[in-house]
Image (cartoon, rainbow, N blue to C red; front, side, top):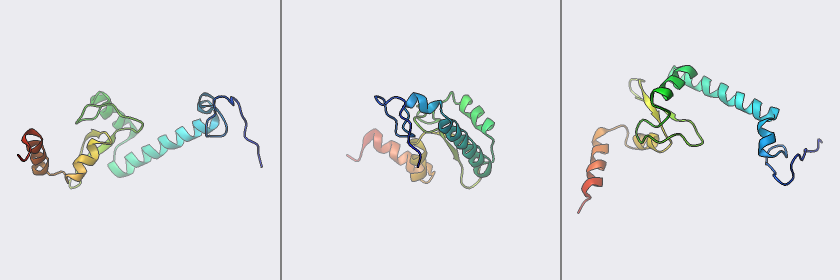
Length: 123
């Protein structure tokens, strides 16, 4: 059994016993980053029929923010929003706006009713 290396015991990191700075320069981080990029490219290609370059171009076109609320992505990248019937890509959405459209089943009448409710309420 191998022993974990402690590089900075005063700044522990959960992965491999390294601090955050050392972990990001280690082969573990590099391999993980490459694996995530490869998985993301595969998902974009096989589910949405776009390349990683297409995603990055759309991201730049939206100025790096959600198409609805205009907030920048958090820890996760923006999700590809698409029409489920035609497959047409509409834009990139954050983790709040994407489920909002999904929960409304992409129905404009439901969203309009929600807007009317927010403007005046029931009373």
